[in-house]
Structures are given as structure tokens and as C-alpha cells.
Image (cartoon, rainbow, N blue to C red; front, side, top):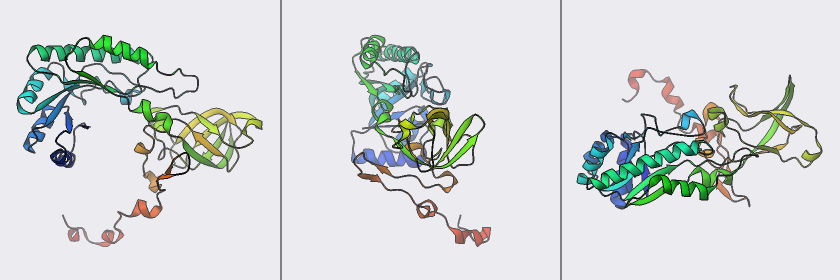
Length: 326
């Protein structure tokens, strides 16, 4: 089990150190010398992996390219000294880096370069007497969100990864993440409003950026399919699927060729299993949806307005400021 965080708040570190007390095999990944200090202050002396910033990144959108951004990890120039310190004061569990999220196509070249640099660092550490148990090259492997996009050729990626890494004494670790779960989830949403507009038909639905944030956040493409029984008999028109939030970004697709929508239609939005429910929110006091299995089993119940407002304290607003506890 591994815990990897970026600039973890104090409460998070308290929690994970408590978890380590109960499960000493837990590995913590730190991306700053300051985080190492904070763990030491809490009495942690267990398995610690160093997150490295290799100076190269990749990903499906600039907002998820992590490898070269200063927010993530320790620079290659500072990594050897910090790794040596971890090896003296903790159980050094290896090095970790992450290029970004949704890596495929041309981005794989940058990912291979990241792996090559990690391999060089691992050999440098081993030459200096610091044993590298694991080289974790992260994950972020892309999935074909578009219907005509080719799938990732895992065998080719595996071969290129081993070649880029080179010979090391430790083990190679990957975190496939999105690749495993993206197409394991489908968002179902119902049409409640149909409006003819210049150049498109707007289908207003009961899901939006609070349910699936990726289109608004990353301009991400998700396939949309009409589940209406007679969808195959309807005319294809340009359809904009719009959510209920009063923001222009609240669109699941824009002017997409789809069967002409009708009120009550059910639409399926594909590849919602990765960063779907995890990025859902109650923005605009909108309850989050239920999660169910294909055969109808309930995984997570639908939220209600009472759930959304349960932490509110209406009575407190009528009290004078000085009456509030600090």
C-alpha cells in the first residue's frame, strides 16, 4: 500500500502516520524535503519513497501535465542528496515520478524520456551506495475516448518502457489508473428540455459539470449515445447537450451529430469511470447522483438536498460576530 500526495495538509499527514502505526508496511511518497521533515517530526521512520521532478512531462491537457511543473517532486539535481538522507533516516523505498495524465500517441515519447532519466538516477544512486528498491514511473496511460481512436498498444509500451529504463537492481512499478477504470463507468442522463437554436439543437439534461467535470475542465471529449428505442429511425442533427448549471462551460458535448432529441430521452455518456464521480461536486447545491452496477446493484445512493445542506448552521447567521466561538 502506498500513499502519494502533493503538499499534504497537516491533518492528512497525521492520518497517514496513524495508518502507518497500524500497518507498518505502508509506503509514503514525499515530493519535498519539507514533507520529509514533517514526517520525521511526527515520528515516522518507515518506508519512504522520493518523488522526483524529471523536468519532462506529458498528458492530454496542459492542466494535467505534472512531470515538468515545479509543484511536483524534487529536481534531479537535488534528488541524490535527499535520497541519501532518506536512506540514513528512514527505509528508502525507491524513486517515483509521474509525467501526467491521459498519455498516449506522441506523448509516449516524453513518457519514455521520463523513464530514461529515472533509470539514470537509479543507477547513480546505486553507484553511491543507495539501494533503489523500486522505480515507480507513475501511470496516466491514455484510453481511446473518441470512437475512432486506436487503443493503447500495451505490449509496445511495455517494451519501450523496459528499453528506456535500462538495467537497474530494483523493481519497475507502474500505476495504470485511468486505463483500468475509464470505460468501466457510463453516465446516464435524461433530457428535460429541447430547444431549437441557430446551428444546433440544445438538449437540456439533468447532468452537467457537477456530475462530469472533465468536458468543462479539460475540453474533454466523451462519446454520447441516445438510448431512445427509436433512435435509429430519427434524423441526425447537431446536438448540444447542456447541463442545468448557469455557466456556458456546462456542456457535455457541443453540436455533436446525434438522433434528434426528445424530452424524456435517456442519453449515455461513455468513459465516465475515471475522474467521473471522484470529481463530482455539489456546486450550486446540486446533489450528486447514485452509482449502480450494470445489474442494478446500488453502490452509492443518490444524494438529497438534505444531504447537501446537512452541514449548514442557519441559526448561526443570526448571532452577532462576537458570539461565535473562535
